[in-house]
Amino acid sequence: MYRYVARANIDRYLSVLYSADLTRHERQTVTKLLLGELDKLRHDPTQLEFAEKRAANGRERVNHARRLCASMRSAQQNAKNRIGC
Image 1 (cartoon, rainbow, N blue to C red):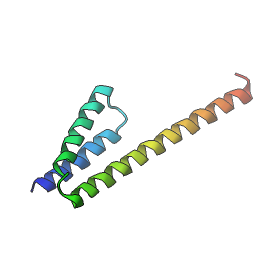
Image 2 (cartoon, rainbow, N blue to C red; image 1 turned 90 degrees about the vertical axis):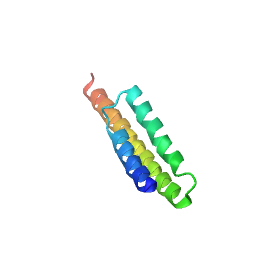
Image 3 (cartoon, one colour; image 1 turned 45 degrees about the horizontal axis):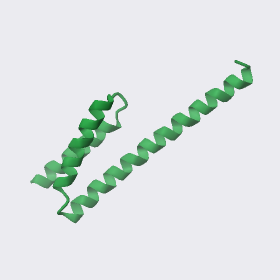
Image 4 (tube, rainbow, N blue to C red; image 1 turned 45 degrees about the vertical axis):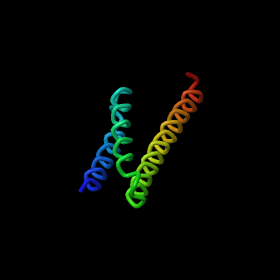
């Protein structure tokens, strides 16, 4: 039963971390909660693998969003330079 609850909590905490409207303090708090749940699964390799995959997917989503933001900023700057602003 504890594994089910830990997995559900991991999913919930990751979905909260995906949201963009978190303050730095809230993000730190949710990250600590996530690490606590991951720690509960450390003795079960299958469960730990699940959690690691979810975290890796989350990191990739964040990196993708960062790349998109950077490319949009670059495109905006290029447009301003062409207009002469």
